[in-house]
View (cartoon, rainbow, N blue to C red):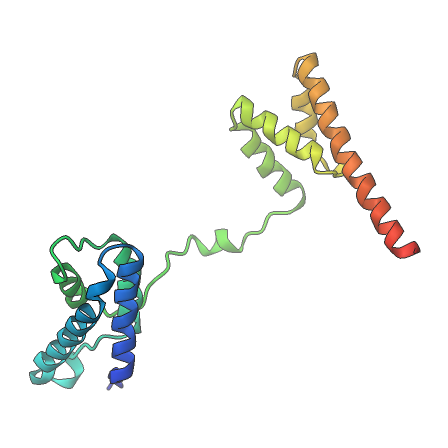
Length: 194
């Protein structure tokens, strides 16, 4: 038989206060009705609990933290145009199960790319980009300060296809990146030598 833990009065009050405060944060209700809404939520839970008194113990469902987290996630989208009615209806209908996070194929999640496979994935992504995105990506790689050997070859292959003005701009980006590395290197050497 499953063990049923009922919410204590203080936990119920805390949960109700959290719900109402979240409603206030999302501008769903005004601050001056805060205590009224907390009271209504607590009354709703008490009535819900009393209605379950006639059910066998195994069929009773009590408000729990799984439901509370779902309610807290739904508050921002709740329509409070009809007052507290929609909130109480939602509280009655929220299911009792834990939140199940959708996990992609476990093998995909465990698969970590590195080396040549990672570079192949980068190149595949690069080839799907627009012209402007490719320019931005090339500029980002060149200004990062990486050694030339670390920059993927497809970046340089793409730069070779550009006109002279854009090639010159890319040379400027590469110089900026190398100047950054030079600046950082001087700072590191200075910190250790002095």
